[in-house]
Amino acid sequence: MIHEKILREYKGSVCNQKEGVVMWMQLLEDFIKNSKEPREIKRATAVKMLLCGYKHEEIMPILGVSSGFISTYKKSFFKMGIDGLKLGHKGRNFCSIPCSIPCSKPSLTPSCKIS
Image 1: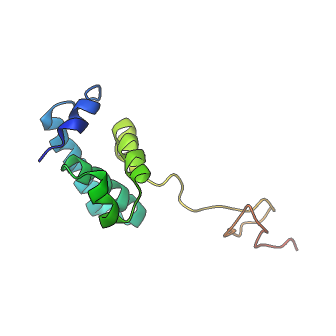
Image 2 (image 1 turned 45 degrees about the horizontal axis):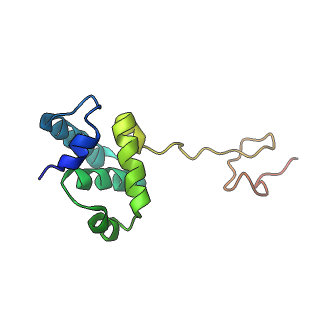
């Protein structure tokens, strides 16, 4: 079942026909299959479930997410495509002290020392 409300809500998008939903579903399926990051997979799965007609109240307990999480990534996906579901960083945080040791919490006490 295709979620008709999503089609109406995003009719200004590039894809505004039922064929577009098929394309969106394929993009999401490929992304889920190829991503190795669990958080990205959860985001894509939430959007895919919406496209399949699930309501927020049904998705929330299955994925363990909030309604806000679902809304955020739905909007992000329809605005930026798959890039809207990807993590914004790849975890290479360095502290402000000039060294090359990654800090686990750069905003707190740095984990590296000056010699």
